[in-house]
Length: 232
Ligand SMILES: [Zn+2]
Image (cartoon, rainbow, N blue to C red; front, top):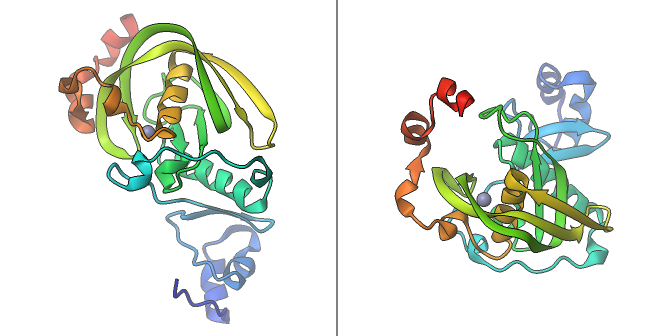
C-alpha cells in the first residue's frame, strides 16, 4: 500500500544494476521494488513469486479449523499463485512443509518438500507435494518419537510421537485426486502439516513438555555429536 507506481529512467538504471537478464523494465513498470533480500525471487514471463509473512502461534488462523477448498477454485490463477508463493516461502525459511493457516489463510492447503536440507543434510528427502483437502488414514498406529520444529513457533524444538505409517488422499494442484502412502519421516511431515489444518500444532502432541528446547540449546545439548550420531 502506498507504493509509488511510476517508472523513471533513474529507477530503471538503478534496477538494471541489480536485476539480471534485462528484466529491470518489467520490474519497474510493474511497480515492484527490487530488493536484494529476495521478497521477490523470480521475475520471468511475468511470474512473480512472493515470500509471505508466516503467522506465529497466537495468530487466530493458527488455531482455526481450516475450511475445504472448492474444487473449482484450484485451477484459478490466484490460487495457483498462492501455491507457488507458499512453496517459495517454505524454501526461504528452510521449512519442510507449510500449511495455509500459517500464512493467515484457514483453508485446507499445505505444501511439503525436503531436498538437501541446509541445516540437516541427513534429513530424508520428501518429494514436492501439494495437498488440498487432505484426508489421512493411519496404516500403522505404532508411535515413533522424534524432534520437531515449526515455522509458527520459531526457534524451538520438541520431541513428538507420530504414527509410523499413513495414507493421505487429497487433491493436487491440478485438481486431480492423489493418494500417497508414507512412513516414518515422510509420514511425520504429513501429520504435522495436516494437524495445522485442524488448528493444532506439534506442542499439543508432546507428552512431555520438558524436552522443549530453544534451537541454540537444542543444538548444543540435545543433539549427539556427529561421530556418535554416525555410529548409532
Ligand atoms: Zn508447523
